[in-house]
Amino acid sequence: MIREELEDALEEMERDMSDDRTGDAQTFTWKGVEIPCIPASQNRSTTPDLEGNSLDIAFSIIVRRVQFLTADNTLITVDSDLYTVDNETPVPVSGRTLTFRGEELRIITAKLSPCSSHFTLTLTDPSTNK
Image (cartoon, rainbow, N blue to C red; front, top):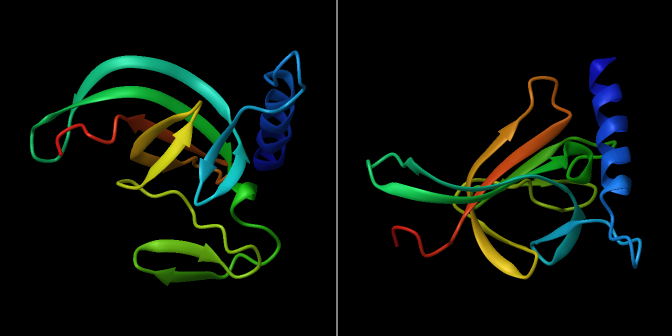
């Protein structure tokens, strides 16, 4: 029940945060597909990675899980990407890059919410610690 309520609220937030001039939703490009999202925060902070190096956090975005999984939630693992059988859009995973607002960013974490309604993606500059 809470999952459906959160999904509905997130979908409404996507519409509310759309561009006033064009009506286009905020999106990020993931594997060549434009995916609606909600910019959660613009962080300019630093956090340590697993090796103890510092990572400069740029953004956090929220994306509904339904953008990746639809009626058939069977997953196929290929080169550490998770694909759905029905729409072949890979689930975001840490270490991969995406494009948000014209800027390429690397995913530091891809956290699935406790009720599986959405992912929170924490992003950084892809050249950080490379």
